Image 1: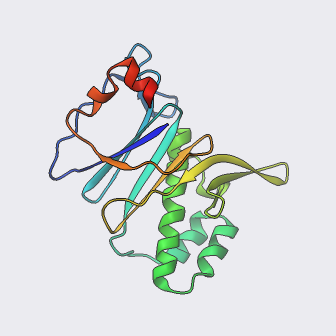
Image 2: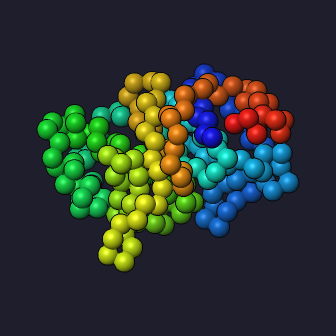
Length: 196
């Protein structure tokens, strides 16, 4: 189960989160004595929007606004990405295709380090995004091992890229739902949590 929510930060207030604690790298999670302790969440924001992923397993989400890059995506990739990812970007047929590919890779990488809770303490070139298989691959004993699944849901507003990572294969893409003031009410009964 995974549910995705979004809100326009300029037009709607954010509902307060239920009680939270923090993991070893600072990633927040629902407090063990909370009604929501069986759920995981992650938040990201960019431009005018904020997104929230809620799942029954660890999850990471990233949102990036494509406001026109002020830097060369290939140069950025050469600094932060794996050689395979750099080759993928180099093979793009147009600047627009390269920019789109860059954002798909970048959001997947950000979602993965948010899934693990490591943040940028984990080098972005220590794992590879495989867009074709929808997975994060990490080197292990001279081979690559699947570390997480990637979902790149189409965000409701043009000009944004989003990615979600989980530890297991994702089912069909979830639908974005508005992040309302009563968001947590729908998770407040154990029946609702079980139904997700």
